[in-house]
Image (cartoon, rainbow, N blue to C red; front, side, top):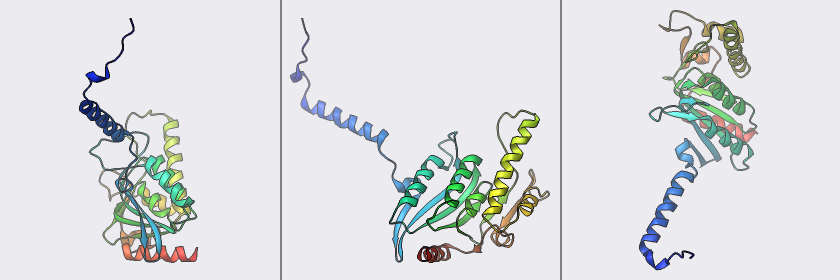
Length: 243
């Protein structure tokens, strides 16, 4: 005998409530992230629309960090950069940086994309632009840093199990040279001077390297100007009008 489901056995209100719960559950897991949750927003400014992208906390690469760590995920940033570059409406990109560094390859990937964009770009270092944040700061067409911000420059470091073999040191050197080359090509500091700063001793108690203030970063040629939001926006609008 074939079993037939009796629809009358299921009260309509219960069925409707369950469907609503299922829809809510589905939306919770599949709803696209709000742009403001990703630290980005497009502003229709006085002189045209510009996009603001924030790179904060730690740059997250292939490995997920704990939920208690403030991160910038490269899989969120990369599609945004593609969309900005292809948009006919966005006239410029303002990158706000306050980062301790993070995944080297993820940071370099984002920096390379920014450096290759035709859309006018301006970066502003707030608080800190440390470690891999340095290539990200110099990747923009014009860079600014607030007077109170700092930038920490040090050699490549890695966590976890490492093999004490020549190949490991060779990999470190190659990774470090990628960073040095990128910074030298996208700023006014020479590769030799950047290596000197990176390998300086005596300032960082447990590491090689140096902490640069906003003024020092400009003097070394890493950053173009000391300034804040108004100066960065004015520069971005000027670049957009010249494009």
